[in-house]
Image (cartoon, rainbow, N blue to C red; front, side):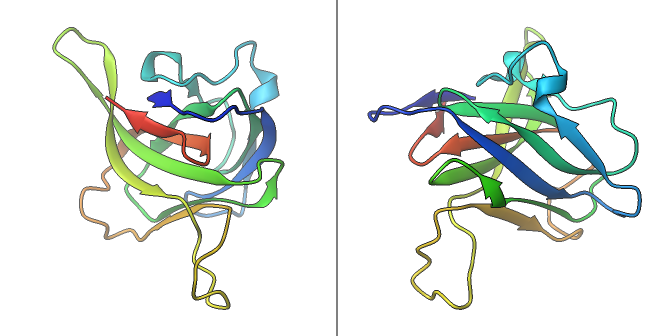
Length: 159
């Protein structure tokens, strides 16, 4: 995921709340538990692994503009949200399918994006936080590797 922006950005702490199945044995992934920071491109994405049970939360720091996480999806319902805990004033979420180019390099194919979450009490959708909600029957949502990207507002994927 390459990003561009015309505004200066600062890093911010966040927690992504995820729904990837049965949360009975929920698992949290801490970006700080790894020696590398999540990157902004597929070849620098932080692989989310080593959690026991369904992943329900990613806690980390976006810096300076975007973070990309490689996650495993089962093809069942999926949701992600920045609504609960974030120091970023305005976020965007992106979900990409992981594929490979002819040279074997990882690439991110856009699947779904959302800048604001739907609040039935705010018909003008002035939310500054983001969510993605995909039911299990979403066309194209198949088991496999995906990239979940979180960015500050107006930092959009290119390429």
